[in-house]
Length: 427
Image (cartoon, one colour):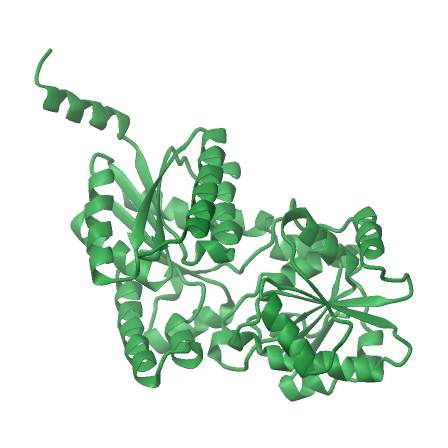
């Protein structure tokens, strides 16, 4: 029979002889990010065979006290991910980090080290600052570990400018996050950002090495978002939009940096000019109550406020004619990459946006299907004739949109420039 402990260790060594993929996932899974970003990320890695991921350990940051409703959502999402992993011959395991605290950090470090101890190699994909700092601890203590830092935004500046906390609390968090950012950028083996402006920002502000930074915008999945004339007809009938009317659509949350006041002021101005009811207006958001209050504040009576996910979201995007994106004019927006913009384009919508929004504000300026406004005042004072002259993307445009903004472009970049680099570093 032999020594039971030795037999167990031997068995673990055999089973865990390959690489462990450690995905330190984004926050707020119950608000949609877990579903829209993290689930799709894992599915894309597996379905496009970006790497041989036989074992995935995924961390999820959750509150100390999780209500039954949110626990049910968590359970559902985990089952979805397990099903996806099984479909591609992989095993996924979960670890819950109880809040973004020092205690949570060290507990997570010990548990991850324990769960991946017998693997020969570890590849950590860390979403945002807290997670990446956890990754630096693991990398420091555990050999053959590669750390990738995924930067979705300027979190310190978001905290300072847009948190609802008191100024002292915001300042302390801002300085703490700045310190974490410096440590993470120095210790990470590679970094991905969502815009060229973001990459330039890191190089100028932090002195980062350009060769270690990949630009990977928030891309759309062409199997989820695509133009379909039958869907367009179906959903326009559903919302009673006439053939001679154009639907202007805003999709997304109504956070402070998304400038909801500017958005509703724009709607108000358009409706005042639209004497013949050429245009209809719709918002898709989970901030239903907030949207209703803004509509009342600005006297917009017939604004359609809807919720939609999955195929219904694609249907409404197809029913629309023009998408709109609003943001602040600070660096939080300048380095951003709102996924709604490529999703609008993928469903053959024209687009109205501000110059300050990531790379889109620059890249789309000369497109006949885009109206790029210089600032919020310029947007609010838009003349209806400017919108009338907007053209929809034609066939050639749609080919370019698929080529430049879809998962088909950026998954190969992730495979070649990040995973391949990791494989060469941790042999």
